Image (cartoon, rainbow, N blue to C red):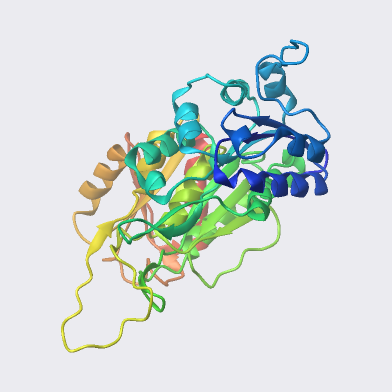
Length: 409
């Protein structure tokens, strides 16, 4: 999927800079053309001569060539590239990208880039966990950048965290998957009748999330994923390119234009949803995401003891609310509300607070619907009206929901 692709590889001042060599080799092996742009700090960790030997291209570092004064055009690079990858991306560069501080060739290239941008952070675990770094990450995600999450390790506090750059082969695989999912619409989305969503890109979340207590236990819920999968199949039937982010369920999707991303936890679903939503026309958030996770995850199976076991819980990401903040003009965001009491009031509150276009309300009071069932009974609420539906199969309910979405796309 990378054959003929033009990739700008940005390298910053990180101990992981040596891994850029492996990234270059993997990209070239896949048929890509690579142009390296390196920061002054990056040259302290790896020499431009090494990088130039791998790419067969001069490495760009300064605005003007030191040899003959030739101007290196960041604008031209932004137009030339099919994608920009910053790997490794230091905390300093991450902050400059988020703030638009154009004090080196890499940042000016980034600000001129017309192609998708992928960022692979690499830094100390505590630096990565700092609220300032996390705010910069969220800012970059919100404007459409793709963050390739770093690997796990342990913070100085003893808690698990992330910071070490993802391995080169996984970084390259992320680019391959991106281009594979964004083939021309006629190849990605074979038109089937009715083709009311032909060419549209729809992201759907489905199923439960599992929040680990220890290696063998988790906090979860009874969601089977049937409703979300039915919606994904209905969107695909109408010609949409579907990205289905699925929690741990025992369901399959038919071959065709549904790209499936399997996740386990709320954190994983949040990262996938945030990365995908920027390139979607609409998102339907059908997953039953855990609102809380254990604050500490035991490294080994917890043994039975005499004393009571107390598990302290911490809130998880509110995926709908975060996507509501990201939503751009023309994008649509659909949510679900499963309630046990005060159904209408709670649903209306979610509709407003999370910046949804409409919300699908169902209730555990309706027997034989919701979790594990093949049927559902819903109401659809927008800011202007409420429409109630009779009990139906989830396939038929999916048709009703997609009809509502089609009407506003």
